[in-house]
Image (cartoon, rainbow, N blue to C red; front, top):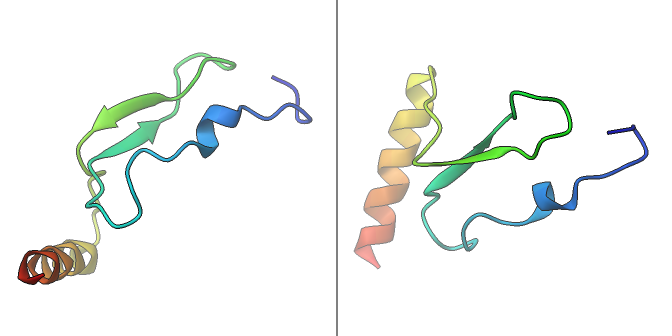
Length: 63
């Protein structure tokens, strides 16, 4: 893939903007292959992120 070629599939959303994220992309093993879509949230080593995700989940359930 050259720098002037864009893989348009990377712009396609995996979930609706108002829905809880349930998938993420992982870089392909070979250059030029499409990214792999993995179900579930991407893990974060930052504790604050886990706390925010939990708070947002609680907020979503309240409505």
